[in-house]
Image (cartoon, rainbow, N blue to C red; front, side, top):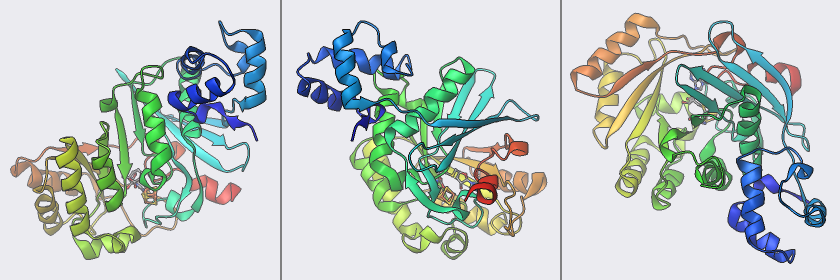
Length: 346
Ligand code: SAH
Ligand code: SF4
């Protein structure tokens, strides 16, 4: 079976090209045009002999995701892109958040997710498929082609749990930050995780350079168990150890994400537990507005309770931001991805 050329790293492509009896430099020539110029079919390849293009076509396919729909928010400039994976027909979504001086693309790493968090729409679909590095990149290339600009930031916060698709996520980051790819600084890339302790340790061992965001949502173990089933597998204690290890190895400050759930995790005892948790390593905390999803018992904390929570943390000199939601009207906000997919397509 011919493989999708977008899935190959530069080194892998070099091996393949040498295997086809061609010179190694052809690989970087092709790689650059695929990942920097985003060509859509092999006939668009420049400065490559026709015959060799024929050989490439016999060996690889160049497959993008099918773009089914784009929804634009009327509240802000957020756009949501609905894609279909050609082979399996699974649907995934990406979101573009445009601000004054930045275009952030939020990518999916899996179709569905098996972590089953209580407050998340994706969690309700269940797991369908791990995306390949090429499928993660195809989201970025298609969105940037649609807007006619390269992204300034990439966040792995769409559908799925990135650290349960470790290998492909790392390979996609490699290509986004690699010189022959988008050459984006890893500091502009953030990978968000529900908190898979062994994988966080591995990120440390691999000394990754991108930002890590941990979706904490409660620093009280029993409470976190209630909303994040994964917490039953690795407790908060395990997470503290894993993040410590990550910090020792990478020296980077992690981001703690904390969705504000009214009268569930927004009391002062919750703020105190959060502050205690954060004493273990340098962090920045983002308090996130809860976006309603169907059949979920939770409500957003609202402005007053969120500000009181923030003030408690501010008094301890912690770095805390309140994150407002974007693209709410088109279900593009965090955790809302797949709201409509559940009912229409699965
Ligand atoms: N699986 C990863 C990344 C995808 S979810 C993770 O859990 O981190 C991206 C972010 O959206 C996470 O912080 C997640 O907790 C948050 N989120 C999920 N459902 C949400 C909701 N209904 N409202 C606000 N944020 C939500
Ligand atoms: Fe999966 Fe993240 Fe949603 Fe939890 S919050 S179900 S880990 S996508």
